[in-house]
Image 1 (cartoon, rainbow over the protein chains, first blue to last red):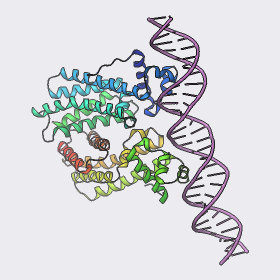
Image 2: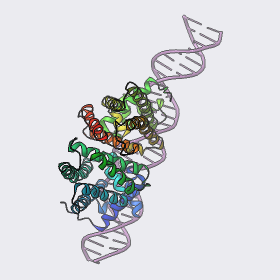
Image 3: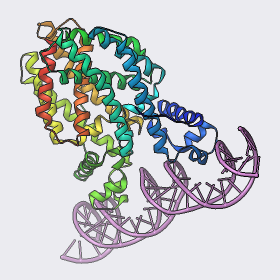
Length: 195
Length: 195
DNA sequence: TAAAAGTTAGTGAATGTTCACAAACTTCAC
DNA sequence: GTGAAGTTTGTGAACATTCACTAACTTTTA
């Protein structure tokens, strides 16, 4: 587990970056806009971060850390694989509903092209999700809640693909529709198919 | 059906743009690089297209047109919904295997941010796929090949989400793994789940 | 009073685009 | 046929704008 000794001011900057990200996308996330949103000059940014990339990295690192803890907690409180499955995605929907900018950050390929470090950070986030999902699906298959006609990896692919497409549509809709409501429908559909 | 009175030279430029796209991503697709690849000056580009955006639009329009025809043909030759379903994705995998740059063009959000027109062009491509998939799934559900426990739209969402994630992974792998081989596995998995 | 946090005013590099101009080719009038 | 006129396709040099980032100086804060 990583440490997050990020200052209050740094956190404010990261928050502003997120705000811009969800409002204007990656192309809107410039040092100029970020400084504007912070109501100070561009150069002031560099008092707190060494580069623009580091700001994005901080955001993604926070997201990874938070998601890992959050999913861990959500799963821990439930007993059956189905309950855990539902709880996991419920937690995801809650999180993204109140942090819509992370959808842009984590599911955008434009950002992945920016630097090697950012690319790795995004892959790590995907890995966290995978890490938590894998044992649930496996357990579910073992005790017959989920079908074992198809192998675990492919089941996870379908689940994650469905989730990602939801996020994509939500973003295209400019975060208008109710993510939790629509999301829960898809989760139920997935459970129906997987049983 | 749209017309495509695109000149030979324009087609060459679009091809070069695609080449760059699959090699270096969106951030690599600059007028400078494009001219370099064409082995002429940047300004020469503007003899053939009014703007850089128009080049991308031409590429996407071609893709939409081609995909529409291709999917129509692929489906027409088959009788049962299952066969049509398989044929449709088989056609997609063949196409993308030999036109990997379209994966970057059609499934990248970075490009969607560039202009309203490009955004629309990408949405049109998604709509084409939807248009062809919908009647197949519906027919399949009617005659009991696919489950009707979940509604058609959600079934399509899952199928398209699975497909998109495949494309994403293929691109992240720099088009290394055998798309057709891996793709067919996922299609079989989907068929198993949907029956 | 010294460090932290801000400002002003710049940097060079890259972007897409436009400009005046030229070589090569085709069309057409005489 | 031959020369004038027009078209196509290219060139190199600029263009304004944006980008991330920096140096030097000032203000705020503890």
